[in-house]
Image (cartoon, rainbow, N blue to C red; front, side, top):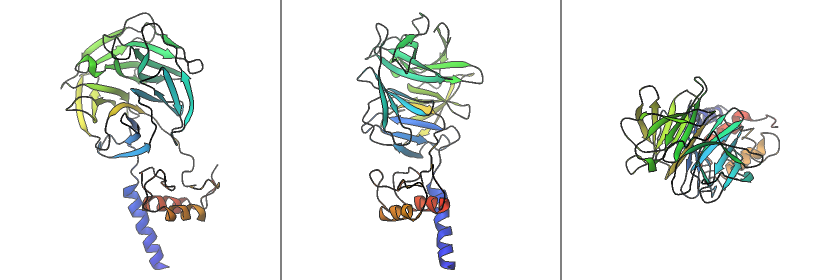
Length: 313
């Protein structure tokens, strides 16, 4: 018994290191290279990412965590996909109806129940602020302002100051920060960010920091922070696991009882058996990857032991 207790303590210790949690900013990054993965990223150590959802098969310039679901805009079709944030399964797909001269969403941001978006013409055109009706798929311009003379690479809303920020996509040259009037849609150019870089995403983290994604030969898959008062960009580091980071969002995704691997409604011997049977295998397709690390390992076994005996809704 003493040996077993020792060994279990060792497993728990390993799990504490292996099961890396998403950082305080709650960042999720979309990898636009097939199979189009969604990753959790830690802003304090950008080289540490955990794959959350794999093999989406949707090429997307933007995605957003909105009211508990990931919404993914499709670059090759006027379609918005609603995804289960735990499994990546498509809950529904909405056909979009755009105002004349626009056919793609390149940026999205939630402000309460409203989903704002940046729209343009596929291939690059003026960026304009709009909203999307998630029941009808109708995309409506906010005001009549033309917005900016390049596609929007991202939108981010600061709830503390009630400010909607935007950033131009790489087709517009070096990254510039904008603010948008949510009534008129008018974009105000604040400044070019320094040091200069090209961008493809923007998001306000749960920690109140403004984050951006780099998009150039020198800055692909790099995470930046932005000070909107000084217009200073700080290169935080490379997200090494990603191939083609195209979009970023933030929030909290609740995962109801991931330790119930076999779906029996309780964490029991069946779940331990599933992990041991698949131990060392990549997930998916193998069952038992409780922490979403992409591998069935000691961290997953530790999580199940810790939750053993619990009922799952």
